[in-house]
Length: 220
Image 1 (cartoon, rainbow, N blue to C red):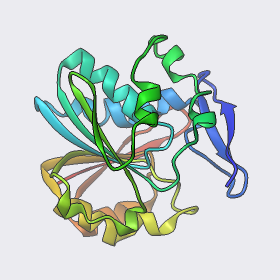
Image 2: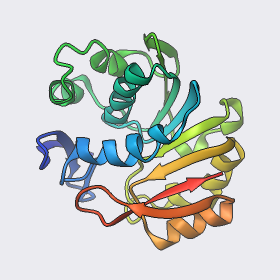
Image 3: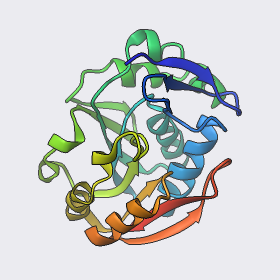
């Protein structure tokens, strides 16, 4: 599927996929959305010195970049696992403006995080190790991965990719989550909330990012 770079309302880039009429991030602000949903509502709620993070939908690498920046502030050690079925090409990721807008004009991590080999672990900073997994989430055996403290659920919307939001996926993630693990997602649909509850999570609707009234945070 073709992907077109567009600028969102906060000036940061995202991709638009015409074939399915879907954006990678909120058109109200890609960085604003990721900061609110995944960093403030997720990462900043965990006080552990070492954190295992699973991202469903590695995509542009924006969530990983913001996590690196946050870990640099807190000195938390992050083991980051990102699952992506359709990685960006060099032509695509090299034109994204996240490093510039986050104040990391000479950020040495954003391009390497995309360039490093898939299915291999790489140490990007003193506090951040990345393991990108090129695969369909439906095929992942979560039991071979470490227990996760935090899950960034950033797949395409349920009406575009319904099987990724199925209860069976949430059950597997729940079983491989540490006690107290947090799952955060921009999605607040009732069907997603019910599937998370049936999988075992305690679910709460909390205020969403700009342009969205609510989002979901689920806790094991």
